[in-house]
Amino acid sequence: MSPTGPEPQSEAKASSPVTSQSTPRWRRVGVVVALLVLLVDQISKAWILQGLDLPAKRSVVIFPWLNFTMVWNHAVTFGMFGGHGRWVFIIISALAVLGLLCVLARSRRRLVSVACGGIIGGAIGNVIDRLRYGAVVDFLHFHIGQWSWYVFNIADSAIVCGVGLWLLDSFLVERRSHHG
Image (cartoon, one colour):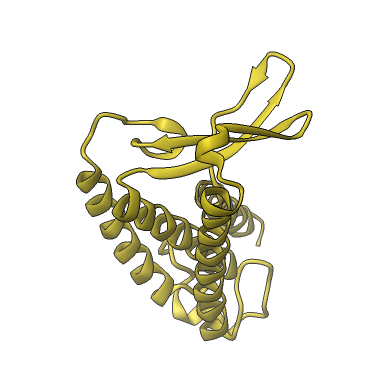
């Protein structure tokens, strides 16, 4: 079993939540997901920077549990690995996107295709920020009482959701192989 899908002989089986007989369709869905994530991410960041002018306001309360808070993130998701040069992150992200495009091109499972699309779109969105601004635009800040989550963006969310979907797919494939 490869991480991109079952071996070709198993594709003749009926469709399931994990596999599909029309694999090119799921590859296209992955590309569409990547493009949608990239579009929503970049539009949201443009609005935050120019429309709302969040850099000048620093933080705007949207709901009691959500602020738009301006953070220029020089690290990676949730501020991890700060202190490394932006070109290191750009190169690593570009290599990851190329690898994920290869996985997507070979994908035979819909969840893997959607997951790859989310991760690819998110990674490209954050690379665009690093190239344009030297840092990633983060602005979503969830908090309740004393609890506060890291400030993040749509691209970060898509990356995390993509990884989660990929893990779910692995669990479903493993479960099906033990029960079927």
